[in-house]
Structure formats: structure tokens, C-alpha cells
Length: 291
Ligand SMILES: Nc1ncnc2c1ncn2[C@@H]1O[C@H](COP(=O)(O)OP(=O)(O)O)[C@@H](O)[C@H]1O
Ligand SMILES: [Mg+2]
Image (cartoon, rainbow, N blue to C red; front, top):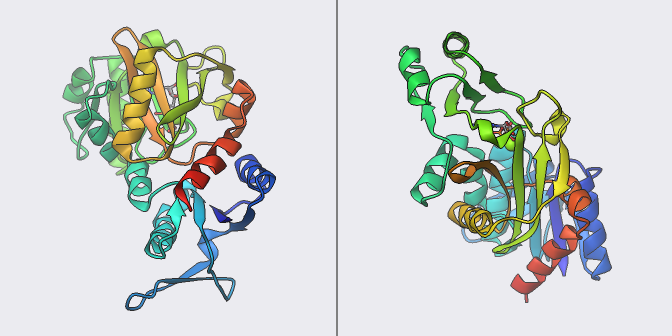
């Protein structure tokens, strides 16, 4: 098969591992920088040019689109779809997953547990917002944040109100969320490929840190999901329409609560924690879908 990885950075661990896994299974694999693709649209003849050369004979793509280039990356994925190329992440699902608010709405409709979340159009009623979120302490999140940057724990009502007011004044969109204290600075990541959990890890924030992100100094260890956690993770990936997903959940007194669903989950943390060859699982997923 002829597989292409859409990645702006060929040196990333995930990209390298996918190249390795595809070669091991005797596929031709190439890394394409989607930001350097030109899209040609005309009647029933979708074409992509890459570095001046027409891209053809592609059987499947693995999109690894960074959050900063979602708009153009999605257009490239959509163009491949029009060329009837199999994609491990559909363009629609990619767009859906990148909008944190829309994602929470989709997950809520699917009946999944979520931390109670409030979003307003820069409302001045900051007192009410904090009360709606269960009162202090509350979590305040910049809508555009990733890797834990832009997630704030406001310990008191006063702090929460002034932080929300400050962001409102800057016209920075935030969500205000119930703080799940019993999660204890940890969360779980379930890695899903094709409707199955292929690995799961628990990430624990460093001492005194409520954010468990590995980029913020958290540490990961392998865990076995409860049936309830596994069901929730699979349901979340399905609701988002993602063939490959990293579902992040908090363990709470009322069961698993979905935090976010990542459409380009990294392989490094999960392969290290679980010792599993997840890149290989992804290549086999493609093989099942391309004849
Ligand atoms: N409502 C919450 N209650 C408790 N901890 C939370 C809550 N929301 C986020 N966290 C912690 O902060 C981390 C980062 O939040 P997250 O929503 O995943 O943002 P990002 O997209 O930046 O990773 C989570 O992994 C979790 O450990
Ligand atoms: Mg996160």
C-alpha cells in the first residue's frame, strides 16, 4: 500500500514510529507536509500538488494535523477524501474535535459524564457563572489552550471572578468548569483505534499541580480501565466520529467524566507507559479498510 502521513514535523516521535511500523509491514510510506500542499478544485477532478508534483496513487492517509493549522490541514484531508483515499481521521471529525465547546455539546448529547461547564458571551454576571459551576474552587479554561497552558484553578470566589473578568476584557473566550477535586491531579487517557481501547494510562500531575499534562511535568503509568471507563471512552470516540482518538477522563465520585477527545493523540507517552506497539495497530487498521 501507499500510505502518506500528513505531518508538518517529520522528526516527531509519533511520525517516526508510524513510518517505522508501515515499513515493517512492507508498505510505501511518505511524510507530506500538509501546509505545503496546493489544492486544485475543478469539476469532478480533485487534485493535490506537493512541492510542484501531483500526488497520486495514494491508498490511505494518516492526518497528524497540529492545532495551529487546523483550517488548512482539514481542507487537505477533505481533498484526499474527494480523491477517495482512506483517512484514519475524517475531516468532519477533525474539525469537530478542535472546537472544545462543540465537542462538549456533542459528548453531552451522547449521554456521557462531563464536568459541569459554563460558557457565556463575555457575560458580566461573573458571580452567577461561578455559582453555576458549583462555586469556588472552579476551573477556568481558555477555549484555545492545549497542553495544560491556559487552564487555571481559581481557589476562591474572588479569584475566579477577577480572572473571568480579566479574560472577558481581553475578549479571550473561556469556559468555566466545576472542579473535580477527587481526581487528585490525575486523569486517564484511553487510546482508541477502530472502536477498541488499545492502551490506557493514568497521568499524575507533579507535586502540588492539579494539571496532569505530561508537558507540565506529569508522569504516566499503565492502568486497566474499569468497564464503565472503557464504555465511556468508546462512546466518546464514536460520538466524535473518530477512528483514532485519545479520550481524556477524570475519575470522579460519580464515575468517569470526559475532559476532551484528542484527534491526533501522541504515541510517545502511551507506548512508553503500556509497552505496546500502537503504531502497528494503526497500520493494521488501515489494512482492514483498504483493499
Ligand atoms: N474540571 C476539572 N477538574 C479537575 N481537574 C481538571 C479539570 N479540568 C482539567 N483538569 C486538569 O487539567 C488538565 C488540563 O486540562 P484540559 O482540559 O485537558 O486542557 P488541555 O487541552 O490544555 O490539556 C487535565 O488533564 C486535568 O488533569
Ligand atoms: Mg488535556
